[in-house]
Structure formats: C-alpha cells, structure tokens
Length: 290
Image 1 (cartoon, one colour):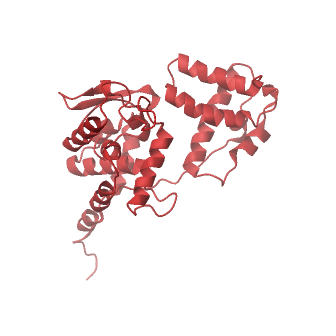
Image 2 (cartoon, rainbow, N blue to C red):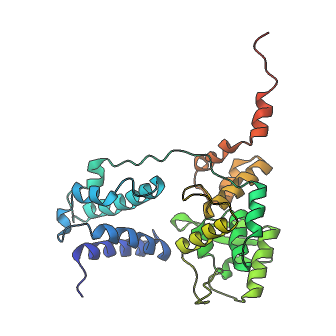
Image 3 (tube, helix red, strand yellow):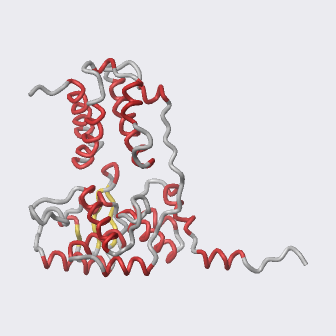
C-alpha cells in the first residue's frame, strides 16, 4: 500500500525532529498520532494546504481547551517546517492567527483527606508506585511512564528524570516513594528497563495516555472523580506535590527544581493556591470604620 504524500511529509518532519534530538521516541509517537490525523485532512498535493483544511481540522468545541491548544501548537510547528522546506508558501495557522485561550486556574491539589482516600483505594503495588511518583516526587505522567530502573540511585535515594524537551533533572526520593517503588519491584522483579510495566507484556512499559487513564480509573474507584474535567487526574498528584512542598519550605525555586520548570514564572501559578485559613489570618485584624 502506497503511503499518501501528506503522511510522508509528516513522517519526514518527525524523523527530522528525532534525529536532531528535539523530541524523544515517546513524543514522536504522540505527535505522529496528532499530525497524521491532520494529514488525512490535507489535499493529495500538500502544497495546496490552506486555511480551510486547518479550520476543518481544529473542530473547536469538541475537545478541552487545553487539548486544543496543544494540538494547534504542534500543528503550527509542523507547518512552519513545511514553509522552511518550501512545501507550502505560508503557514495557514499563522494566517488565521489561531489563538486558543485557556483560563488560568489555580492548580487543583488534593486535600490530605482526598489523597489518603485515593491511596486507600489503589488496587496494587504498581498503582501505589505510580501514585507515589506523582504525589511524592511531582512527576508528570510521561515522566513516570518513561522512568527506567537504571536511573534510580537507591544509595543516594534519588532518580534521574527525563522531562519535557528531553531535559534531564535529578530529583530526591522520599521515604514513601522508596517504599512504594521497592514494594512494586519486590512483587514484580526487574533489574533494568521501564519501572512501570505492562501486566500483559512485562518487558514493555506503559504509554502516558494509558497511565493517565489508569489513574483516572483509580480516582473513580475512590469516589473522587465526578465529571471529565474536574481536575482529578494524574496531573492532580503533581499539583499536590508542588503545593505541599511550597507550603512546607516557602521557596518557589525549590518547587521549580522539583517540577523541572525552566522558568520560575511557570511555577508561580502555585502561589495562587494559598490556603483559605492563612489568607483569612492575613486579611483579619484590620478596621477602617468606627
């Protein structure tokens, strides 16, 4: 079967990004899913791609704003490359000035009670290992999925994490994280390869979307998830770690380093999560009238 030209162009782009070290294997697979979906919307001759094809593909209102923003960002980069390679004359995403505004929300950290409820409903050692890496270490779902046993330093109690943009960082491991990881490896022994493994194919890891669906299921099992976009997801564990560490140390640069943010401005969103009792204490005691 002959591969359509638009799909061939997409694969050329993704191979270019991978060869230049700009994306990991996992990211390439994720972007391939998104861009091949767009390629099916493109004309047989990619040079004829225009704003109509982009408008049909975006489908606003059918997906969460954060998802739409990510898809548009990935498409913009692909079409910029197409312009540079002289495949198309202009980037229709930029012609449309497509902008997806996602309201800034205070991260939805779990309360101590909800975190304990979730933990009590986790079904096995693997689930507890995943949760501990989110709650205790603040890892993203892709970072948990990409964690390899060789990058765990048990003596120093730390782990080397591959984050966004293939950036590495070393993060300390808490007692609970070490206990959860050790219990999982004791139950399903392995000395190398992915830490979090498939039960069907034990030598293989788990893709980030699958891991995210698993955690969403655990939230439902615990009675903590009520509707699709209620903030009860794998990312809520990362928010909880960030909020709790900031509350404990009061130093946003520490939280920045834990989360692997390049800019502290990204981390500043957690400053808006000031607990209501502290806010009330700061607001009380003032009088301006008789």
